[in-house]
Image (cartoon, rainbow, N blue to C red; front, side, top):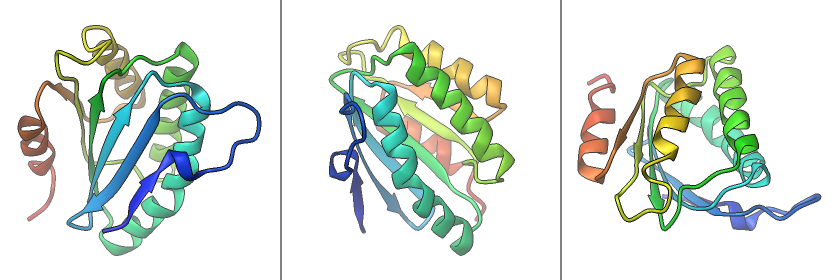
Length: 149
C-alpha cells in the first residue's frame, strides 16, 4: 500500500500549514491522517496529490469512500474551508466524488467542537454524504455501508 504525504510536494509561494498523509485500503477506501491547523496552501497541495489517485480508483473500481482522522488540531482558515467546498463541487462535476465521507474529530483535538459544523456546511453545499464521529470504528462502519458488496 503506497502512502502519500503533503510534505513531499514543492511549494510555489507559501508553505502549507498542517500535514496530511493518506493511503488507499482495499482499493477503494482512502484513509487520511490530518494534523492541523490547515491553510489553503496545504489543501491545494493535497488536491494535486489526489488527482492521479482518484483517477486510478475510478478506473479500477468506479467508486470509493473516505475517512479523515484528525490528530492534535483540526482548525482551518476560512479560505481553506471555502476551497474545500469548491473542490467537492468540482469533483461532483467530474463524477469523482466519494460515496460517503466520515470525519473523525476526537474530543481532545483542538477545534473538534467548531470545525465539524463548518465541514458539514461544505459537504451540504456540494450535496455529498458526510458524517462526523469521535472514533474511527464508528466512522469506518459508516463508510462501509455505502460500498457495494
